[in-house]
Length: 427
Image 1 (spheres, rainbow, N blue to C red):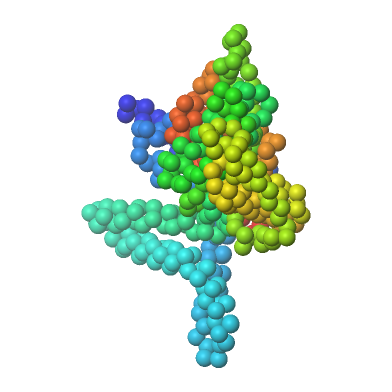
Image 2 (image 1 turned 90 degrees about the horizontal axis):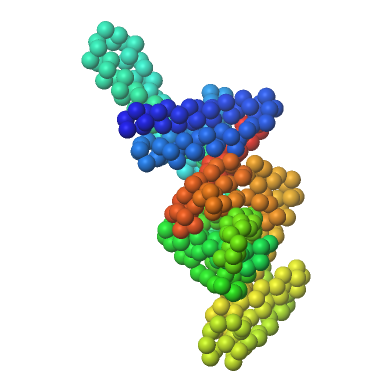
């Protein structure tokens, strides 16, 4: 067992070290084979995580060139912070100017705290290096100083990684909740069954994360499947975690309706939209047409007796949202407006992205629902994400929401690597 553990750690460290040439690949204008590197790194993590606790502490190595560029940015932040502080201390500053400067300083505060901690740690390292040079013959002193030096350099690397992340571009929507939409695609009833499996997978995953999962609407099919299902997921950083789940999820398995045992291929589309409110999208009453009608489907005596279902049409865009999940017309209307706001907010975000001519995460994918992102192969018991080249053979655990982080974390790491590459190329 000890030999196996050392073997796994050796392979893991080799995979992590492959991330170091990231900057040189960009500057040499050669394509980075990110899926291969990431797959090697993450699959090694999966193999080792049950036998070693240090996996969670591993971080991508930063090249000297990248550290040099980052230090230049940090110096610029320090100078800007000092300049703003001097402006705030001027007696003739106006209230408007004071508020503007204070707002900018608040944005720099987190980075400045990390920078100050890093500078202090670097000063400590310089002092320890001087002590090593001053007492080359005192072995006991050298051992003690070298141990302190090792710990200080480890802390320095962690601070550098934290600072690099703070310098990378951020999506303001990442901290929001999200609207999840799952729709059955090609495959008939089998696609509807798998759509329900995927919807419940995200429900279990949300509960595991401590998020609030609120069903917005489910359009059921026969055999306990669903043609469409949507939910509002609320919590810190929900959209940032789930945004790369958008796309086509393909399933390969023997349907319950198949008598000859043939394997069928079906598809389900998943859309993840950041939650928004009427302040974000400026909904106007004159732009909305709200219709009520009697709900259909299961529901006892209430169904088909009251006009509780709500259909909201946004006239300028033509978007229609229909909700009949709740018994109350007011609750259905509130849910419909919530979904409509998310759809309009995503349209505006896409328009801004196109105007900037900068599409994020080219390697991960745009999240367009016409793009196949993942395959669930039941006969082989595996799930493969085609964007990062990672395969898990724990299909049951993934559908139970237990091991979905295998892919979620890999995609977030891929996004971070792409952002670092972009940061390097733009300096």
